[in-house]
Amino acid sequence: MSTEAKVGVFVVGSFAVLAFTVIYLLQAQFGGGAVPYRTYLRYAGGLQPGASVLYGGINAGNVTAVRPWAADPTQIEILLEVKQGIPLNDKSVAKLGLVSIMNSPALAITTGSNDATRLKPGSIIPSKESTSLDEIAGKLATVADSANALIAQAQGELGDVTGNMRHLLANLDNISGPQTQQKVRSILNNIDQLIAEERPKIDHLTDQLAQVSQHADDTIQNVNGTVTNVRDPMLKDLAELQTTLKQANDLLKSMDTMVRSNDYKIGDTVDNLREATDNLNQFTDSLKQRPWSLIRIKQPEDRRVPK
Image 1 (cartoon, helix red, strand yellow):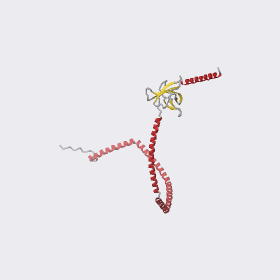
Image 2 (cartoon, helix red, strand yellow):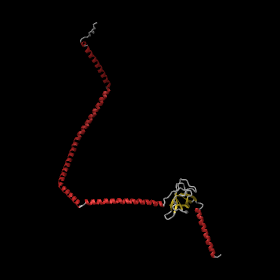
Image 3 (cartoon, one colour):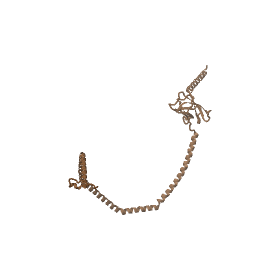
Image 4 (spheres, one colour):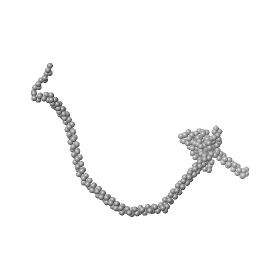
């Protein structure tokens, strides 16, 4: 075998080993270890088979098919495969995403919840619709229309404000004109003349107020001295009055105690006086009926009624 043939066999063999290695690695990565799932969206946004599947932002698999759903043609059925061990759960949500601005669309899946039930192979991943570019453009158009209307309204209001400002400036020009300035100057001159004429009176009034204030201070000092001189005797008299009242209170307490201790004697005396009064009343009635009983010892017999 020639040298050229040996080199050719070696090159072909190297390419075969390289192809086998690449095929083996691809099968190991996306082959039997991949787990199939599916999801449904109303707007696919240019998603194509072979697009990346992102789980929490990391590359977890690929989209295998994008087609209208046979059961409901208004929805797009998306078939995908993810790596073995990706913990998809019933709280995970699939939606359109982008790896970067320059890349094609990808299918983004949220991580869901750790407490949620894990999805079985072939299960449906819950989905969430993304806003399409047409909807964004429509909203931007609506905002632009609103902005145009707002700008037109603002221009109208600014026109009114401008007119009012012009009217105000015209009024200020009239107010600050030569005639107004002359009047203001005349008023200021009159005020200066009035102040010059009344200044002696104001000074005299100020002096009188100062004298009155000094006299008031002296009067207050005299009153303070008088109060100080009268206060001590008044305090002494009040102390003596307090002592007298205390003694009177003690005397009243003693009398109250004595009256309470002799209460039964007073009751007996009152009863005796009451009995003596009754006897005196009976004696008085007897004298009124028989006044001769004071002279005669023996009373005459009562006259008999004639038959």
